[in-house]
Image (cartoon, rainbow, N blue to C red):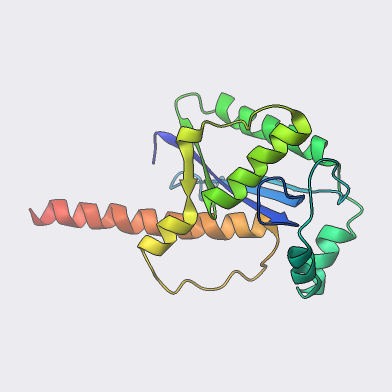
Length: 190
């Protein structure tokens, strides 16, 4: 993991497909050297997003979620336009890369086909540019977690993109630490 700059990304959206409206973007760095120095990004976004769409079933699902999560996303005076959020996230990722030139950026989503694809589509539709990462470095947290099934404690603050990203990063770190220790144990046994 030391050759990589790992970033866990989580979105809260109004749909499940590329082209859906994004309500918030949360992201954090992770890896063994990041535990005490985790870089974080979080923005909540206005619901009005030209070119992006809402899914009725997802909007109904949101109406049944915790009121605190709903207020954070739908009635937050800090909400910003989607174009500004995408630009700020692009800049945040580029700044991370500039301060970690010896590492390759890897982005993680839960799953890569959800968070990352919806974010990529938003960049193309709203900003008319590509997402700030290579498709070769897209990683799937859901796959990692399912390969190592464990009863992890529940996220105490679900449906908050930053909280979800940090929670997922902590689980990924625990899995990688277990794999690393297992490898060391195997080498010592030989």
